[in-house]
Image (cartoon, rainbow, N blue to C red; front, side, top):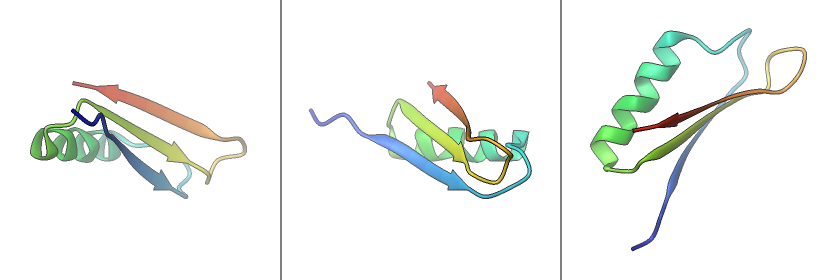
Amino acid sequence: MDEKIILEIKGKNHITETDVSQAINYLKVSENKLALIVNFGESKLNYKRIVV
């Protein structure tokens, strides 16, 4: 079985709860287990790891 990661790249002031909810929905639909939200819009790189 191939393990896949959903990678969502943003350029926003910060990662919002809406971004997290959207990633969780992507995980549910795709039946994947891991998503990363990476945000380049802040003063330093920020990311959030989501596992379901």
